Structures are given as structure tokens and as C-alpha cells.
Length: 631
Image (tube, helix red, strand yellow):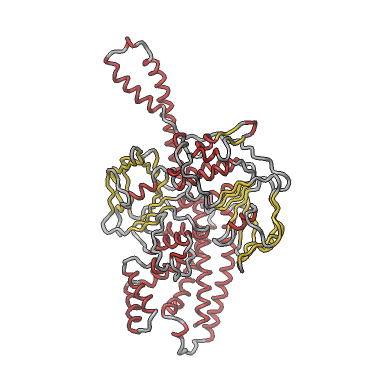
């Protein structure tokens, strides 16, 4: 599509009863712009997205899309057809390439040669071969390999990934994404980050992933106090400019208070001194009082937490074995935790992270070996699935069920109400009934119940899902002060990098690697190792190709077409050129990374792309070898 405006929003206002959600919003998105919408949970992000999509009607204002703009939307509700297969759901888009692919898929199921030839011709006309290859790449990167499975039989995370794949495959002009990284493992998130950064589509997303906000986005839209603030930059630019705005607001408030003190002296003067001429000054005083009393969110003093002391024996795993059928989770692993350890736990989906947590906390038993939990250990386990709440209970009562106070050092205490305020539950919400809370607010309440138990060993399994970026900042500060042990599973790389000292990497076959560093440092080393392996494989493939070329052309075989399908033959013939192109890009990236003038952000971007290219070379080399053997 040509350049210009894709979306225009003018004077948008929305209320629910007497509660104002947002008022008089004005903003737009240009073609190719990549924007993120950030706000505290419960302040209107989802409502604004629904208004944009005409799911909710605004009280006033207009939402205008450019003519013929194609829109794809990833919502929290996947919106898939449960009675159809993954493939059938993915290829529902109505464009020439999709129609050609559907025709081709149907033709390959039958034996009509004319129908098959017509399908080939339609694929050529629509340039659908590359479209199909891209679709298969997206499916592979998102771990969706068995596309003949029916959606009704998929897990919640798999349905979410199918919905995301559908949005990406449709290649829309405008892509609206609501928390796209939920239910993705770290490898998938890194791939998606690179894909969206390179895509030419216009993007508006709600996400708490700050690496996405830093690398992918060029605009941050902050919804705060019913008003939208626009920042033309990425996450670091937003933090800088928001800090400046907050400082200005503090200065304005302080000036207003200073002036108000002087005005207050005048207002309290004898009534006889006031005449009709002073009415305007009294009105101005009322306005001044309003501005002076604005309560700005301020950084709170760090808490000096005082959990129960950990003894000499904390948590020990002795040659622990665990498997489900033939799937090994742990194969004789031994580890002893030390005081104050902060460990990240990473591995692909299905590698056994949640199983390992259950073994450590005593919720599950090993098949062999033993797990020894120290007598002084008090676990605080934040699970992916929060407990069911009594819907008729009030927010503060949910904490009172655990405790009314959290002990601090020097005999001080933190009341339940103070903890709620620290984690962005304002005092007027403390007596709200739980049935009024959003999904993110429920998760935050579950988190506070865990903390209120005053644990000395925190075990967090995906705590960042459904938490907004502002709550994450508060949680990070809290955990940085936490003096006990921390075991963390999170797909939020920013969050994990800030909090952990070393990483347990589950290989999915029973092995655990203990890497000394944070997640980004681990990925940098893993990418270097993958790069070395890919170089070896590429060299072997090149040597094999040169050896065959030296032998001369082989006699044609009559069953060649039976060995490779038409599509596979096209793929095989093009792979050597693709691999050569990727090798050239890899060499170019390596040269660029050797420059001493690069800043951290550019170096990180190049390293990420190098990892993607290296993995791509490895995958395509393996595929070429497979097709070559069959040919």
C-alpha cells in the first residue's frame, strides 16, 4: 500500500456508567508505523482496542480506517473454528494466494492430473509458492507441526499460537495484537520480535514485553488518567520523556502548593476585606487547590523485608530422575541451593519447567533419587493458574485470609492495605468485590497473597503474564530487595535478566545445564555455539555438492518424480542458492559486529539477526541433505 494514514481517531470518549474510561482521545497511525499501547491494568487498554475494532461503541468520537485496509486482530479470545483443523483455520483468508493454496491442497488429495496442473498454474499466477513457504516457516517457528489436528483438541497455549500464526500468515495492512508473547517460549518470542521488526505492516499492540517495546516499536501510546500521551520513540525514549513529564508535573504541583499557601492566607483574612472584585480570585483559588492536591505516583522507599531465616540446609536434589512415559524430564540431576540464590529456569515448551518446580516444592514425587527440603524453608509459590477466589469477597479480605501485616526489619510492619497500594491497588479499590476485577488484577492479587505469606524461598512460574509494564517495575523493585532464594520461570527476558544470577537450562531430554549469567548472556553463548555447528554442516554440504559435481551428471531416473513431489522438486532446486545467500548475509553480519564503534543496542540487534540467520542456515542445510538423499 502507498504511504499515508491507516487509522485516525478523533475525539474518542467512553464511559461505563459514571466511570470515565477515556475522554477526547486523538491519535493516528501511518502506514508502516509500529505502536504500542501501554497503561496500568484496568485503566482501559482492552476497552480502547474493542472500540477501535467496533466491538464496543464509543459514547462520542470517530474511528476511521483507510479505504480497503486489511486488518488482522489477535485477541485474548482466540476466535478459531473449533470444528476445523489447524490448516483449515489458517487458510481462511480471502486473497489470491490463499485461494490458490486451498485449490492446490485439494488437488494433491486426488488423482485428477488436469486439476493438479490447474492448481500449479494458479499457484504460479498468485506467486503462492513463496507465500506457502512463509506460512510453513511461521508454523514451524511457533511449534505447530501437525496441522491436521482439530483445534478443539488443542491446549489453550496451542490455540493461542494458531491464532497468532493466522494473523501473521494473512499479511494484513494493519495488525492489532493483544499480548502476543503470552504462551510462547523464549525462542518463539525472539523469532516473533525479529519478524515484526522486519515486517512492513502497520502494528498496534498491547504488550508487557519491554524488549518488544524497545526493539520493535517506534511509538508508545500511554493511556493515563483517561488521556492519551504519545511518545515518538521506543521504550527507552518513553521512559526518558515520561520522567521529564513527571518532573514537570511535580514542579507544577509544588509551585501550585507554594502559591496556594499565600492565597490561603488571603482567603482566611477577614471577610469584610473581600469585595465583589475578589470573586475571580476566589474562583482561581479553587482551581489552584485542585491542582495542588493532585496525587502523583511516586517511587516508594525500598522495603527492608524480613522473611524467616533460612537454615544451613535449604533445598537439595540428589540424583533426581523424572519421566512421563518415554519423555525424560530429569535424568539423575543433583543440585544444592545456597542462601540468596537467584536462578532462572529456561527450556522449550514441554521441556519440564513446571514439573521441576513441582518436584522442588514437594508437590510432585521423583521417580528416583530424592528431594530434601530444609526445615526452615517457607515456599511462596506463584503458579501460572491462580487459585479460584470467592467472588463475593472483597480485595483486602483476600489478603486478610493470609495475614494482616507483613513483618519488616527493626520490628516494623507493612499493613495489607499498604501492600495493596504499593502494587497499584488504590485505597478506594480495596473494598471492591473480586468479581469486579480484571484478569490482570486477579493475577496481581494472587501475587500479593503469595508475598503476604512472608516466604523465604520464592518460586515464580510465569509471573509476568497479564501484568502491565508498570506493575512489572514495582515487582522487580520488590524482588531486588528480597533477601531469600528466588527461582524464576518467565518468558519476559527483560524481567529475568534484571533478577537472576545464573540459569538452569532444561534440554528436554533429562539434562540440566547450569549457566553462570543471565538469559541474554546465555543466548549470546548459545548462538555462538550454534553458529560454529552450522558452519561445520554448511562446509560438509558444500564439500558433498562439489564431490557430486566432479563425478559428472547422473543418468536420469524414471522414478525421480515419484521420489520428490513437484513442490519438493522446486524447493530442492532453490535451496543451494538460498543457503549461499544466507552465508553471504552471515559473513556481512560478522564483519559489521567487529566494528568497535557500535553501541549496545546496535550490537544486540546484529547479534539477534546473526542467530536467526545461523539457525536458518542449519535448518535449510538439513532440509537440503534430506531432499538430496531422496533425489
